[in-house]
Length: 308
Image 1 (cartoon, rainbow, N blue to C red):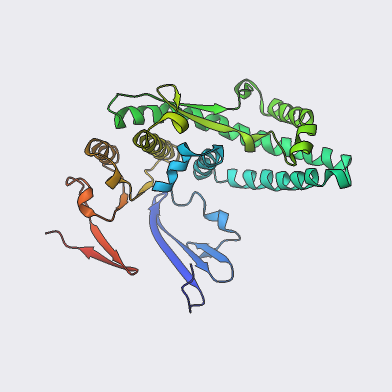
Image 2 (tube, helix red, strand yellow; image 1 turned 30 degrees about the horizontal axis):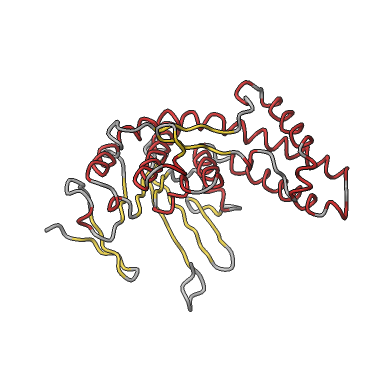
């Protein structure tokens, strides 16, 4: 944010990745500007994938506690770090979806069949690219997250993930997925008109999370839900490390203080050789064996805390 009374705000990060030291600068005035290694970038999305990082903060509980939108966003953001070009695929899909929804909302006034067919075909073509990218990620996430949750719960519970839809996309080619989406959009035309928006497509799909075969959203305790989200985030970090060939930075915002000692110790052990930032209001809430530098932040000023 731009501080009151100031013209602009600037944040700069220097980081080592891809075998060299790099620098990214974001400046905010009337709009946002970004440069990487001194070169101005045409858009903010050009910085995606430059600095691999995984973030967990308490609000991420919505991944389990609320509806599918947060879980789709989680998957899409994770895929973008591995394949930055996916961000543009999402933008294209969302732009066409917005245009199609606007047409549907005003259908009784316009009834433009020609434009409806054009936007429907375009949406199916953009959608097939999203489905293709999403198909691979949930399976990798499932395998890794299941193991992470087993460690967090000390083997007492089992996590399971399932990417819905159930149309059998995994057996289709990319072209067949596009044809299926197009036909599905045609078949749901009246439903869309009645609802006032597009009712089927990748923007309506979900990643279901279960613990011991029961919905984590409806039946899991607060501790189980938190552990499930942590398992997803730890899995995201492992997959990102495997994809880019180096460990991402892990940022844990006020997380450790709400975990018991066993879960804290598991996380610390899993991330032992990674670069990790942990924030908390009570430094004593973090396990004593966590080593590293400590900093105190007050009124925007950062000071290093001397070890006693």
